[in-house]
Amino acid sequence: MKKIALLLVVGSLYFASGCDEKTGTSSGSNSAAGHGHAHEHPASGPHGGVYAEWGEEEYHVEFSPDHAKKMVTVYVLGEDVKTPKPIKANEITVTLKTTPPLTLKLAAAPLEGEKDGNSSRFEATHDELAKEQAFSGTISATIEGKKYSGDFEEKK
Image (cartoon, helix red, strand yellow):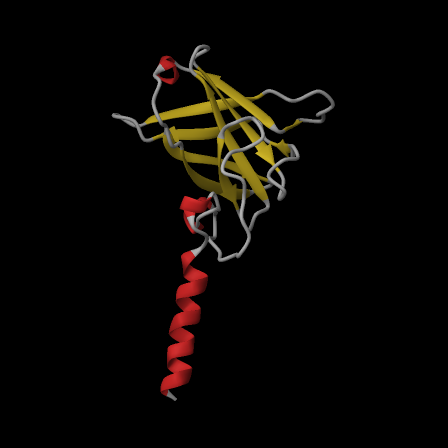
């Protein structure tokens, strides 16, 4: 009986832990529901940014700031963390953990070929983005009535 209880505890801890952020893998805090998985993701997205995960790897969102332009672009990517995955949304929200916290509404900026109100790219500008610093925060959106939210953290 003690062995079964021990196995249940160890198994619960394994599934609750998510992946290790230090190795460039997603953390349970990066998903709407959190999960455990044993594969690795790249340390940065295809545009050089950091990413968060939405849902059970339904989407990955890449936070990619351009300090010179005082701009941030968020790309919505598929399960492979490379391929654009357009969503039907006019905007997504990024909340930066700055002092005070800053909430940005990023407007859809569809890539070539994306149509019918779908976009995999969203952009916003703000003076705070000109600062050379490691940003962290949350990226969120509602897609087909389902709310998604994921945390990201740049390492400098």
